[in-house]
Each structure stands twice: as C-alpha cells, then as structure tokens.
Length: 66
Image 1: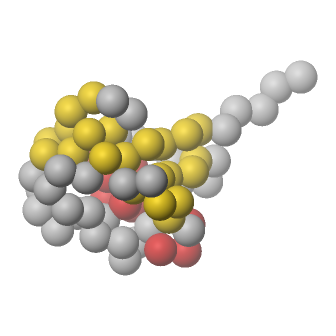
Image 2 (image 1 turned 90 degrees about the horizontal axis):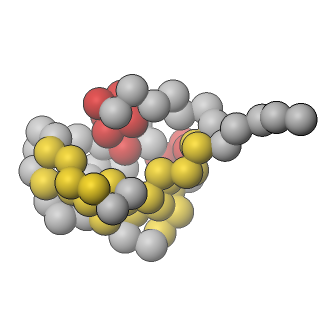
C-alpha cells in the first residue's frame, strides 16, 4: 500500500500498523509523535492502529540538546 510520510511516498505491506511503519523506517518509537490524517495517535495504540492505503502520516522526532 502507498502512504505519504512527511511529504514523501512510502510503500509498505497491507495491514501494517504505526509500529510496523516506524520499524520499516528504522525510527525508534520512544521519542516520536505520529499523526495519521491529522489525528495524533497515542503511543499505546502504535501496535494496534492499522494504516490504510493513501494515509497521510507526519512523524516528528524529538531531540535533546543543550
């Protein structure tokens, strides 16, 4: 299925979850926020929230610094 992630095109297997997408993109889930079609997905739902073809996803990574 085809997704739009942070403005770019990503292809991933049907039935993938938010957790599966993060793994596919080699992004650790601890310091990210994920929005699917303008809805923020709670971290507790990453393993069960199924993505659909055509979804628009924004992933924001938090970085520390000083």
